[in-house]
Length: 236
Image (cartoon, rainbow, N blue to C red; front, side, top):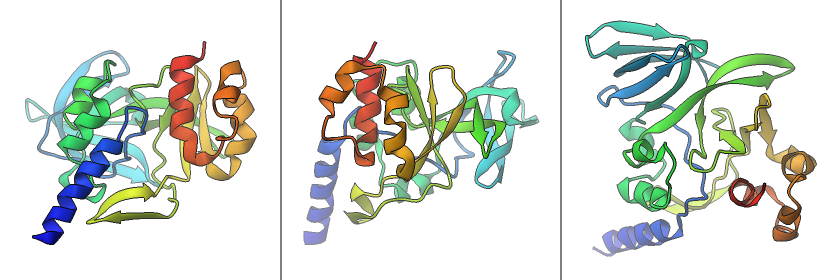
């Protein structure tokens, strides 16, 4: 009984700390039982169920879906514009997420993504990315769909994490990814690593005079979510 009380107390504390400025958790596995919504590069809309996802070095190479007519369709990243798909139950449990988490994080979100996000979907978008001096077309999960109007932050499946602590499998602090893919405006996306973040601050936020004043002594990697959120809403 005591453990159960502590568990639910932890959930309450966790939920109260969530804000709309947090990045979503990255997902690795996806439900084959929930409908997926895919918009192709030519504008065609597909609704179906995830059958298989082929990856290379963690990045999506091909998606196989079963459409509503039970037809199997294979798609390369360059054939997809964007898609909404549901993480598997395993991913939701392993990251400590539940409906309370989603509702708390997105209750103030008015973006076009909000309806699907609140329903448990994650959003993927195809974009050009520089990977080791080579430009690739990748299908990546967007982690800041509610505040991505200036800088988009995409999930890096190979990113390590900082040290964390939690209770009952729920992360309470730490555990921040050490890298993401950043895309500012219409520029080609690139890998942003914790170790290089200080060197990129001017390129990312230098065109916003109020940013330096707001975060004068809070420029570290642990503040990256707040940095992106502020830049999205407060900078011209």
